Structures are given as structure tokens and as C-alpha cells.
Image (cartoon, rainbow, N blue to C red):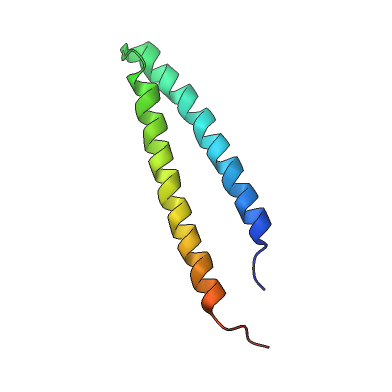
Length: 73
């Protein structure tokens, strides 16, 4: 049984929102405690975005490979 692609893409959206919120809180904490003047927030946000994009590319490659396989009856 193939997974529902709509649910998977919806989950990716929730994943991105969670990453953004987590990076905001962690980045602000780093900035307050270490006096990095916003670099913590920017650094964590950029790292999370890059990681998320890598995850999306891997997921899309998997979907492409699954769609090329012939379905067995």
C-alpha cells in the first residue's frame, strides 16, 4: 500500500513550522545568553532551512523512484 502523498506533504509543512518555531526560541536564547546580537537566531534558522531542504530533496527522490516502479497486482 502506498502512503497518501497529501498527508506526507502536509506533514512536511508542519515540520517546517516546528523547525522555524524551535529555531526562533533556541536562537533567541543563544542571543540573550551569549550576546551574539541576532547571529544565533540567523544561524540556527539557516541551518534548519538547509537541513529541511535536504530532507525535501531526499523525499522527492524517493517519490520519483516509487512512481517509476510498476505496480504489482
